[in-house]
Image 1 (cartoon, rainbow, N blue to C red):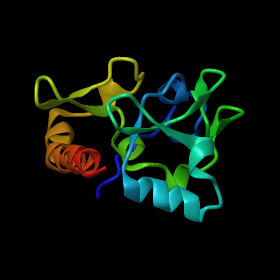
Image 2: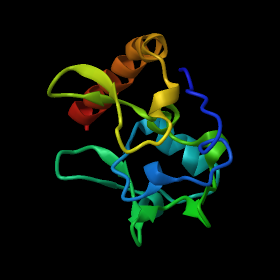
Image 3: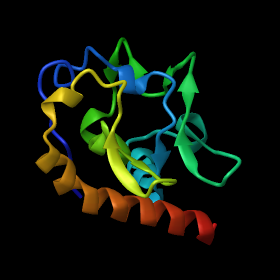
Image 4: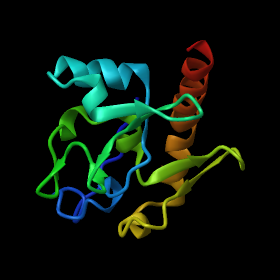
Length: 132
């Protein structure tokens, strides 16, 4: 799947707003990939009350955020690769997360280019949830 590449604040990993109090959902593929890096599933994620796997927060930050840098950036979860493009299940559409200081750099065309892949990712999450 695609990965959104943003410059400036995001590229040098100093912002990390998206890693504060994260609610990022994980696919089974994300979990497997992270486990292959040597991390234990129970350390970095949990299953919420709705049955979705999510990144664990430690003192308000993503488990992988250390000194404001992602420790697994090249292998980060797919949802993180889409960010700040997010999917609203209730509205069944993609949008930009207003918390991200770089959303002004993302064109409508870029948003549309990622919509199909993000919807596919969300469908996969929903399918995995129903299979568990």
